[in-house]
Image 1 (cartoon, rainbow, N blue to C red):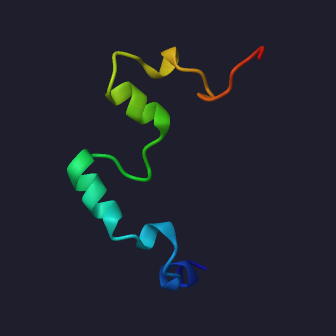
Image 2 (image 1 turned 120 degrees about the vertical axis):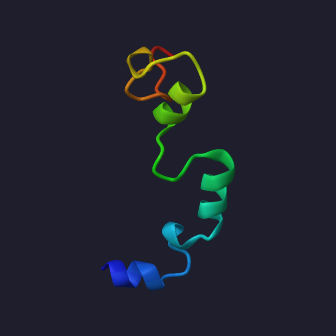
Image 3 (image 1 turned 180 degrees about the vertical axis):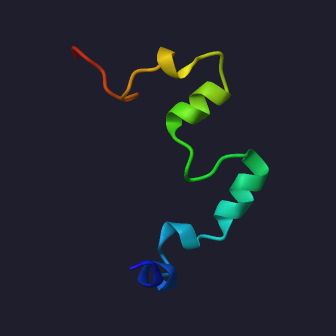
Length: 58
């Protein structure tokens, strides 16, 4: 299966810009939003909800 994905030109891991983004900004497709929020603020993982975009009682 990995061989098929590696040959598929639209598979996200085949995007050459991913390496540029990782070098320029220090993030990769493997970073979660929680990782990004905690690295760029005073928040900790415990401060954030498990599902960041879920809003109760709308």
